[in-house]
Image 1 (cartoon, rainbow, N blue to C red):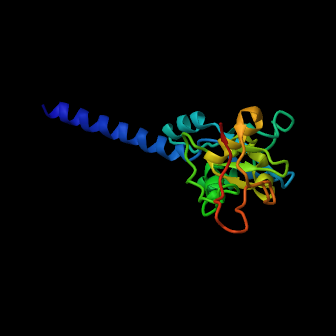
Image 2: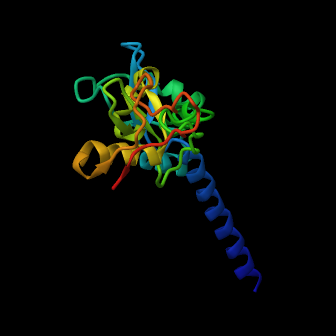
Image 3: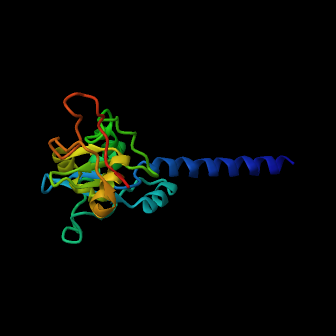
Length: 202
């Protein structure tokens, strides 16, 4: 009986150690945005988490990249950008960067507050100067900083409506008021009686 207890205790310790190591490496998951040490411009990278987990289980700390927006041309680089990621992994995750940018902003069309960025669905979007909306995660990660400077935020509902209008203009019934904002968003009439809304399909 004592032997079984000791074996169970050792197994629990081993499992706990493995889980702890895996959780430590999970902070490196997903697309990340760094400043390339060579070009001083944004670059999208991805950490080889499986190799990092294996190294961690062996008691080593080895974090390497498995993808970069500058590869394959610069696949032989020294990967000095890893210093940025290891210093603060969460701050370099594309999700974190996008969530912080959308936080506290209102939709350029309906004026409602943008919902928190989620991993599953209802992604907030952007509208560019050409008045085209698209979900932020459809962009290459390295282009996010420039897009956040040049575009305005759009909620998921208005993005869906505007996409439908763009793709099926013959199926849309327009409201009597007109687009008058800087990027083509709907604005209320001067008398203030009409609310700001997006067009809906007939």
